Image (cartoon, rainbow, N blue to C red):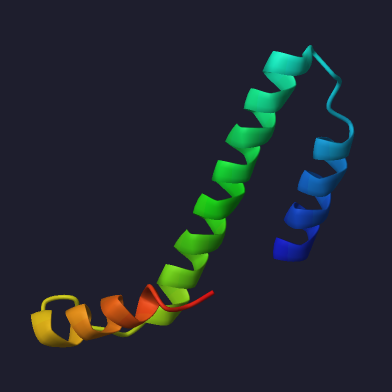
Length: 70
């Protein structure tokens, strides 16, 4: 399902019309930000899966490691 969604997204992004230079630049910035958000949210979910966020020491330790990931 995820692969299909990514393929659909890539297809739709390639079909976007050009509006004008200013709008196109802002649209590119927005779509890039949304892609980063989706990627980081997914990474965060899988990385912290099963971690008890109420255990402050463990959570802070994992959070500090998260900043080092590419």
